[in-house]
Image (cartoon, rainbow, N blue to C red; front, side, top):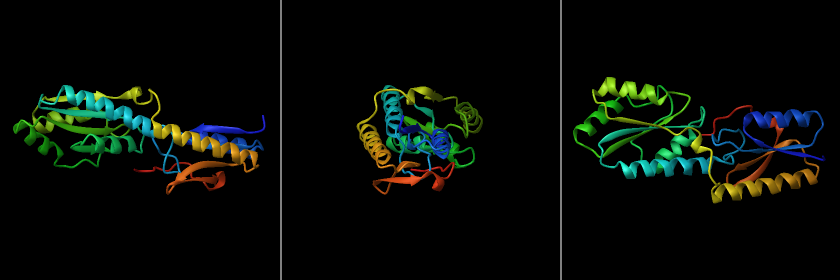
Length: 214
């Protein structure tokens, strides 16, 4: 083996850096649905995960548009909450909760008023790792007096399925650049996507963790 391309999230990139420090030519490619790797605006898999979530949300909402319920969708993404933000915007969520203390203090009152008006539904998208959907359900019942919540925990379904066209193109471009760098003996760094172009950042310049919010 003349070189290695490591594809993965923060842990994988750290492993690639350690291999490179031992003298083995290594290049890292960021790939995680959480989109939370430093020195890149995009990680492979994020677009596919968001599309998976949006498709499932659309199906559920199409079937239940007039049930006058509050739908709480718990999505993955670790502490970055990028899937929640992007998917929530796509489905027109009423509220996107990214942490246990960031939700609007008036959120429950606004939901209660909507139920009294017999609104078709209210959509709450909740990022995992900060507050679980069951906790949101408990608060909803406690603060509104209604028992009209449907909890949808997306779990691993976000990871599966065929990759989107955007992810296929990005992975191909990152892969091509990583091989070219190894052939040119430019080892020891991670491929990234910054300001609309591919970059190569040396491992020593990378932060261990960076929450790239989109």
